[in-house]
Image (cartoon, rainbow, N blue to C red):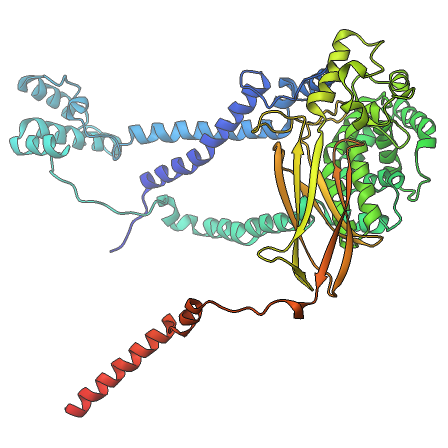
Length: 596
């Protein structure tokens, strides 16, 4: 059966495609607009202290309605939605007025009421048949079509059989057969359009689709794990070493390729005399805090200056440079984890520890010589001096947190609200961790040579009270994004290389995290160092030593399978059962042939 192209079916096909794009895109556009105007609740930044309120206001300014709704991507989406909905309205209107698709209504065609009598129907029919008669409208296809519709409508209302068919099936001709056609426009069949259609088809098939695929593939090939560019991995591999100190890491981060895409335009915009002076002043002011440059590339040098400005809490008096610094910091944790992956692959223990220390400094905006108590809100040199002074002064952040509130020093010059902020951070936000570490082999009582050993890390956040409570967002008022608490577990042999490093993202009050590594290949007693390091706070790290006794594999008791397991081994497999059945069938066929 030959199928015909159908313009009406093609209209429905276009409507379906447009709706698949328009409905979800409209929903997302409306959600973005509602969030921008504050009607729909945003994922708000945690505000628990005065300094966090300042950070929340800055982030809210960046996500203001004017900035969000004026973004290029959002405006392009609105333009596409306008075109899509305009096309949909036109196509739906075309469907409703189309003679083939509209519902057959004889009363509407004749222009009479549904309760009109026979004389009224006959009068309307005569008037319309004269009006649209082909002899009075030669060559007018619309009039010809209307003449046929009027005749059909009159028949449906006056002829008993046609009226019965209309009432039952909606058509005076009775039940209609199902028609199947191709949902493509009929102009494709026009011989005058064949060459143009062929050129368009080849253009789409040969150029546009392969071009889109090639562009997507070329873009995806730039990125490795964690959406980090291979160019960045290459630079990190060149810049990192076994002896890389924490002071060297800002320059390594400054060279990431992710920063360069936006830096060229932003640095170019900020190349005015004022902006150049800001960078020059920052360079002079921060020179003592920075490591001697190893790379002379201008972008790396400027990025390094901006990162040190954040680490030392130095104000950047240039909005474009400040915005670019915030952009670098938002990507910094992901890039530092990429550094850590490379360091772990080389089994560099000290470099891995330094990278996590650097992540702590980036989060808290502190640098190497800063005291740990600088992480507390409203604490400056004066407050830190009072808090650490004397015999009972705090030696570090954890020591200060564990002090009773009435014995905490350094609060005398603070207002009541500021004191409340300090106590809130100490008692409910900064985690207080108790951890235990256990080595074992699953389902075994001893650890043998080459076994897969599990290290069980059990953590309890004692600052949380409710059993189902989770760790709150990190208190990091100088970091331009909200961070969730995370930890890193590192295992190394005593005075030896790094064995593994793994991230712990579980924020429950109590948790158990297991990491696995292979036991040494020789029997003996081994000592390992376990470092549990915070990715967010300075001074909370835990170091523990665990020992492992590895027995020779030959000393392990001989494995004796259970009798039922042996019986299962003797049973035929499904394949053997099938093959045996086939052999039996073949034997039966041979016997039948012999009987014949």
